[in-house]
Each structure stands twice: as C-alpha cells, then as structure tokens.
Length: 336
Image (cartoon, rainbow, N blue to C red; front, side, top):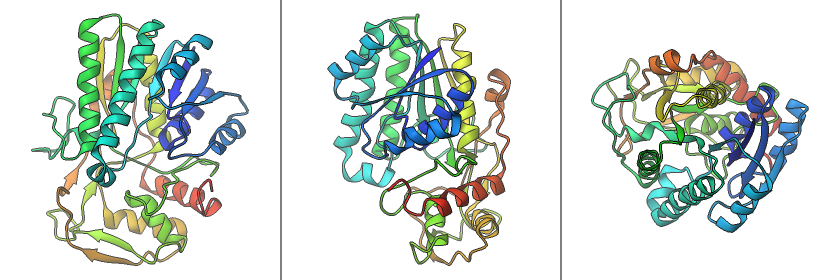
C-alpha cells in the first residue's frame, strides 16, 4: 500500500513515516520545508533501512501536486502539512487560513481527480476550546479560540461536507493532545525554530543551556500542584495511532473521529521533575501570570480509540522526557 505523507519531514510526520515503513507501507513525502529539514529524509532511511521518495512541493502549488499524483499511484494520504504555532496564528491569521485551508482544499481536489479517497487528517484537541468537563470525549461541543484552532476546525467541517457529497471517501480525523518525546535512536525529534511554543522543547532548551530559565504561566490553578495539567502523548505512540487509523480505512468507515492521547494529565511541575531526572540537569523556572485563554486542565477520554482502533498509548512521562533529552543532547541545534 502506497501512502502519500504531506508534511512528512515535520515532527509528527517524520515519526509516522518511520512507523509506516516499519509496518511495510511504501511512503512518498511531500513537504515545502518551511519548518523542517530535508536531512530528516536521510535519517528516516537510517532508522528503517528502507527508502522513501521525497518531493519538495507546497500544497498551494496545485499543478505540482497534480503532477506527483500523475507519477505515483497512491492508495491513501496522511495529511500533516500545515502551519501550527498558536501565537503566530494570531499575528498572521491570513497566512494560516491560506496555507492550512487552501492547501487542504487543493489536496482534496487532486485526490478526487485521481480517485484517491482514503485520508487521515492531523487535527488537534484545540478544537474542543475550553471544555465544560473532563475527560474530553469525541462528541464534546467544538469551538476554537485562535486562528490555528479555527483552521483545524474548518478543515474538519470541509472533510465532513466532502464525505456528505461523495460517500466513496473514507476519512479519519485524529485529534491530538500534546505530542512530546522523540525516536529512541535520537536521530529524529522536535526541532522548533526560535523560542519554542511548547513546554517540553522549551524545557529541553533550558536543560541544554540555550535558554536561561523556563517561564511557568500560572501556579494558582485549581490543580494538585497549582500548575496547568495536560495530556502528553509520546510521538511514537501518536505515530502508531496513525497506523491503526490507516488500517481502519481499509474498510468502509465514512468519516471517523478519534482522540489520540494517554487519557492521563500531567502538570507542568511533574514534567519539570521528570525532565530533571532524565537530563540530570537543574531546570530553573520563573512563575509568570496566567496567559489569556489557558485552562487549568485538559485530558482525553481515549476509550473510543481503544475500542475501535485497538490503540492504546504505551509510553509514560519518563519515557517521553528521556527520549526528548536524548534527541536534544545529540542534536543541540536540531537539524541545523
């Protein structure tokens, strides 16, 4: 089975390419390298001992995308490509709407033209907005508090409308919670440009000495230790969830939606302690005011994925932090 992976040199896409190749799939990657490196392709080959094709193409370039579909006979598509920084999306919303939504519409047009109608879409738990209760199930009301989240939500609606218009499609929408960690080899991992937006890469930068301290936004939440609680999932677990999803699409399923998380919340201070243990480094931090829009706790109900995909995350927070640290220590400047 040949799979096109858009955004396949990115953090989650690259780990999923590894799991696809190791599961016997043929892989073709399309990426514009706007937030990643072509070096990732060689590292995927080193980890797996298998080859994959790479096209440097932007999804906004519909003719180039069409040409790839002419050259390759795809069975399915995994769609990771997109801009993903919440803060940046507030500053440049048009870039996010154009890139994420137009890119996805172009992809769907080309897939339809070439009769490739199996799609796994990379969505996000941000579509739940500020949930009224926990844990979060897939049938919770959806909303978004920033342009990035709105692009994910709009794409979900687009894909559901697409299926309504043509029942030949089979689409899996995967709502990720907080991906962290790296491949055990230390060859691929998260390589944010500039100051990271997410907690674990930020801690990693402090541990490796590139940043002086961590900002902890809010220590007065109604949580066991006052810091924010989130559902963190190891990126390799997340990648394996995609394998389960693409296997599900081999049957006629229509549109299916799954949370991918661990179902357990970890606090900021718990993550700091686990990272200290993994790195044997002090992680200095400063308590800062809460950020607007941040919520106290957020974690998934994962029972639907367990029941319908037979997927359950296996890695705990210590694995996530030790694998993150191995990647950071081996690649102080990421892929640079």
